[in-house]
Image (tube, rainbow, N blue to C red; front, side):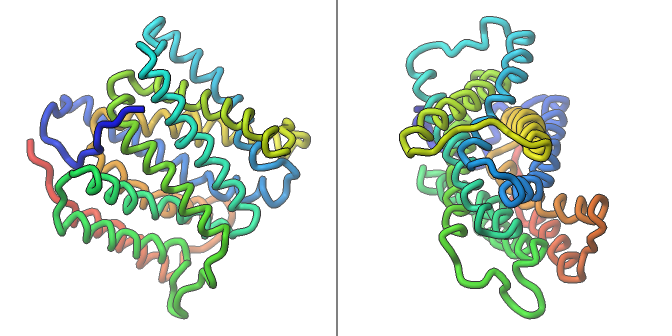
Length: 312
């Protein structure tokens, strides 16, 4: 696995303006796709009969042919990893960022509300910041403050905090699994960054998604868990959605954004999927945004202003 320490904003080798705009557009696509993922996962885990391992495995198995077809059409033989170190790194990152992340999240969604599961997104900026600091990266009080304020805003948007106080109740095993799922994604983002930028987003995404599926298919029998395909129309619709939108588009968008968005800003964008989820609830499910949620949206947007400017 690549051992390069994650770094906070580096002015070196900044992309051309057009490349930077494309990177931000890819990042925005990933955020929008993840914003509508949690309600779908919540529906599938509570209304369907699939095991979490089956949901995660078939999500990646259905996504892999799409990613590899696009990858070989665009890159040809360059889709293949260069040597044993790349193969090992991709296998390790597929285990952590695809298999473990999805397995932990779907198991958690069997017992916790969608709001609790959505906290995965709010944990990631803090976890990436901590990983970067442990790796020796320098940071500033403004960066720490922006992450803390953004986390507070996310809790308001997710209705985890309102005028009556904290509403999550006593933390459960499911909440711990959500935290660990977020940590897996933080590791994937921070330590996979050098390899994703060198290989390219499509090869990196395709291989880590495929390895995620293979790890899950190997894990389930060892744990005595049957891996079964979707059996109902609901399960097929939800699994296909998870494969094409939060996997193909969002994973690819996230890794494409690595080329032109700094690690600090990319991880900070994880605060925005709850905003997308709240707006989607209004547009598609007839929900309303409360005054406390509007306050949270404002806090998250304002917290972005605290991020230190990048030179260059």
